[in-house]
Image (cartoon, rainbow, N blue to C red; front, side, top):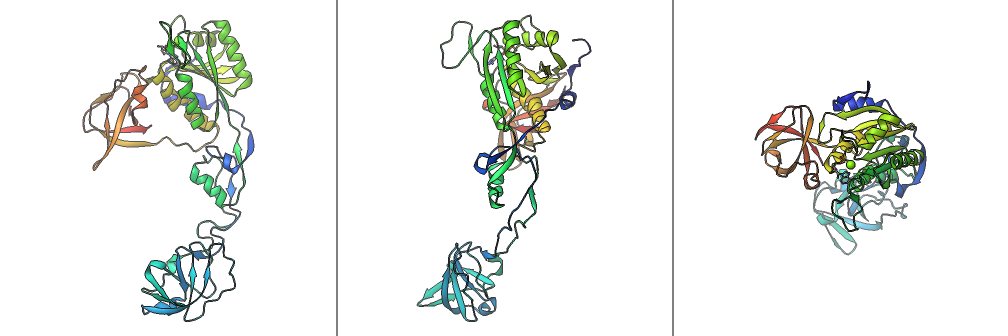
Length: 401
Ligand code: AMP
Ligand code: MG
């Protein structure tokens, strides 16, 4: 390893990763295709929202002065639908207009009463209560034209995509998806769907990691596990470096004779660090292969997932200046004891339940780093500092899964 940082704290590992960045491109996509993408520039509203004063209720519009002594009888002079073609109606004293939710307020009217508080007979309406001024949604009360409503880096969740539409944008400038190669290594790995021979297991990491890459809004490129030889691995890494922006490998980064990712990076790559004080997931490696950032993730399925969440994901968010998708953290009360390993920041997988006293965290599943169920069936990971022992009733920090 020479002088490469070795067995470092997660914070230091994140700092070292942050020294490497990537040039990003921007592309314009149709609004409907902007879900889960990262907004590349500030976006201002092309319109006022709402564009005109309108009714928040189905009911009647009238002059507030006419409604002060309910019940009040007024003459119905017309109907205004949401499309609002009838813009010439004027409400005079003693008159009311039937109005639908979202329809423009007629001239002269300054109050609304919802239909439930009215009765009609012939051409007359009886109001049981005073008209309500707060049932008028005012022009521009949500957004004013020209206002910057979403800033560059915003992760486009469904409601934010809706907001882009409200603001009038049909096309959205987004950060071009990063292509992330996912290479699984290990001669024992078989593709799911095929029969296993003795000694083989199903390859699972690349599927989970592909989902995590998509979750961040980028494009996974899964590459079938290569044979465990240096030549095969070299070739695969070269292809990945040519075609992708980032390389993730899984497996082969520990101390063993057959840990070829570590070996080839030592001999032919550029290692920025190896091993992080993180459990599960201590063996990761980060560096460059032919100028392409590469993370060597551990082979154990839970470890590869955890290292992505704690190291790869935060780095990708950082280099894309993305403010999402968010990692949600919370405080929970332990209902079972949990302890960390001596040297490492430790993440214990727990189920989480709501109670009258807030969240409860319960460690009830075998914590082996090969046991993918321990993360698949958990709602959170308790964050424990090295050496921390927590007992029932302690409040702990959890990362919500
Ligand atoms: P390694 O880091 O290569 O020593 O692998 C550690 C453990 O994880 C071994 O039991 C491997 O069989 C297993 N493993 C490695 N890669 C994968 C993978 N892509 N999917 C599922 N299990 C894996
Ligand atoms: Mg292996």
